Length: 258
Image (tube, rainbow, N blue to C red; front, side, top):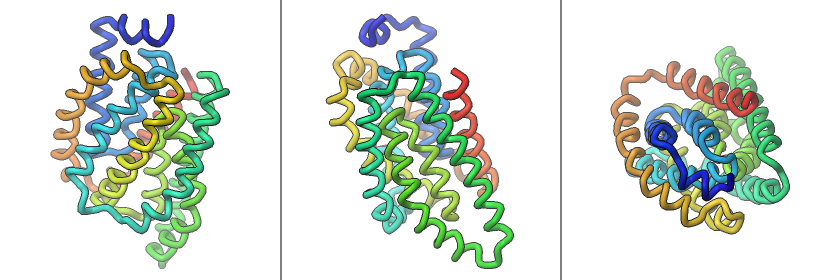
């Protein structure tokens, strides 16, 4: 079955699963960044892997717009400018990778990267907690880590819309608190995801049928984002970090085990 047939021939249950996943995208953008790896897994399970990437991108952009409207004043722009050059290189690498890699290689590579990033971040956070100069150590580590995280983030976001967990790991390792984390992440992904659209169209990942499905699914992003906005103030910083890391690990395992 080709991608167009898979999109236009969805059952009610399959559409319901995609609608729920779209709601999770909204929630992840305004509450627990990284949780949209669950949405990524659902889309890839219901649709062909490559087609799911094209359908999910406009849904993510809709969530990014809502997140920017909510947290636009909390972004840390020096961090963003430090990341963008490396992210651009990662997006270029991801575009080349998509020209040659099949679905199995794509899932395995992304899953392994997510698990590695989660492990590295846990190690760095524990080391920082033992250091007396945690803030200076985190800031210095963040500057050094920006190129590697940026390339990985650009690569994974281009290949499978899975850059969220990678960048979440970077922002956590840099010591960002909830609101600055969400504001910086919101602007980052609105800019990056929008820039990916021409590449996705050129690769045939976004087309007429995928946009029609997006038009039906995008409405479900809004209640998810509103729910996230309500919940974020009730989640303490430690739980917030645990949820982000947990969602990253879950997403990595889902990609590896499919």
